[in-house]
Length: 109
Image 1 (cartoon, rainbow, N blue to C red):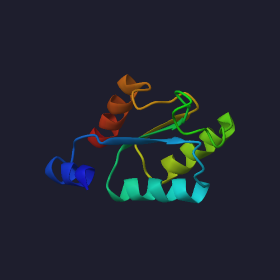
Image 2 (image 1 turned 135 degrees about the vertical axis):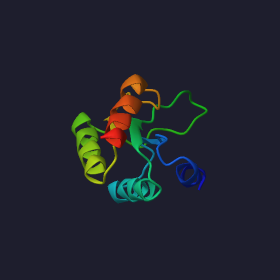
Image 3 (image 1 turned 60 degrees about the vertical axis):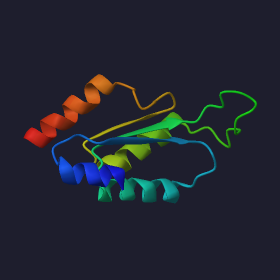
Image 4 (image 1 turned 90 degrees about the vertical axis):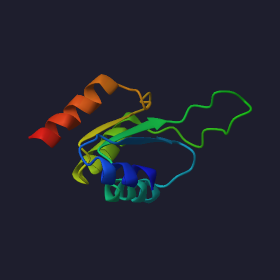
């Protein structure tokens, strides 16, 4: 709701969200989240592999293969995201200097 509100107040502001995979989610659940993000006009998406920081944290259920990240990126881009970063080491700040300018050029053009 917060990001939808931001887009209502400032439609040209670039909005970004991300998620970590590897905690037992299904592909359909991921695609549903992507669709919900697009319904709220999220522009930039990051998808990374959850890595257990310590034994006190949740265990990794599965590690995604690099080609699975490529597929997730392709599916997300097909949904209309302006920019998607997806990979095992992607975090919200991953190549941030490229994400916003890429999206701003789409908004301007």
